[in-house]
Amino acid sequence: MKNTRILFRKLAYGCLLLLCTGCLHENPELTEDGEMGVDPTSVILNANLNINLDFTLLEEADTRATANDIQQRVTIAAFLDGEEVKREVIYQKVVTGRNQLNIPVSMKLHARLYQIVAWVDYENKNDSKGPYYITDNLTSLLCSDSYRANTDYRDAYYACTELDLRSYRDKWGEEISLDLNMIRPLARYELVANDLPQLRRMIADGKTSGNKFTVKVEYNYYLPTGMNLLTGKVGHSKQYVTYSRTVTLPTDEEQEELQLAYDYVMVNGEGSFVSVNIEIADADKQVISRVKGLQVSYEQGHLTTKKGKFFSVEPNPGISIDTEFDEDIIIDLDRPFTN
Image (cartoon, rainbow, N blue to C red; front, top):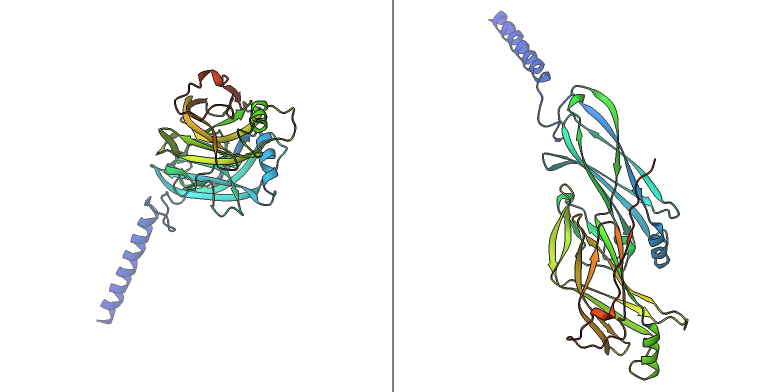
């Protein structure tokens, strides 16, 4: 009987070893930490995010916030079959005065076919409204619920590319490099009044008073406020988005122009236009001018400047405004990458 028990134990132990050995030849769908992958495989991805910068914009914005308030948020994620399986997020100080920025980011992956997505934006640590973009879901990245314009920290960059690591199956500790050339998924526009001499005459004639004016901008129709970084498609459109800004009449009597408002618009890649209503009120909340249905063209990665007689247009909803505004001025902000 004793010999039978010993024999049974040996057989059971042998079966256990056989099962364990068999497991070593499996290609499980989940690793020990619950990630999709193939063991034994570990590939270290060293990604380098390359960004061409127009720091003129950020240097102007930096006058409204201390350097310690603003940080750059760098997000890189790996997607497998449309699902995010790995993410790395780093924060770094914003350094102005450079035309190009290179950001190294590393992550450990398995031998699969991935899509790599990178997103770089800005955060003001002291802004109670939080980040400008909600990045919890990169297939549905959104503008913050508290829509904020008139800030160049709404600028952002992204990239998406395929990465095939299947040839690294059953290898461990391999390292590969990947260069990601980031692009703006945005267009920037600004509204500039070129009728300050007329405004000064209006003040002198008693038609308005004070030196501070509130500019309210309302989007007609639907404005895209979200983007799928895997496909590059914009969406999550909202109707009648508005923003406002208070501007001050320059004391320099020779100055004829004044920037009234500006914003960043998410773009699919093709040029288009936004239709906006602009209303300007003085310090007594008296509306001194109103423009309805003004079309501002835009292109991805470009700055569009719309100049016109914003202050001296009568606040009549039916007035024709075609002759009061200049042609759009469009400047390319994204320059080609150079080695």
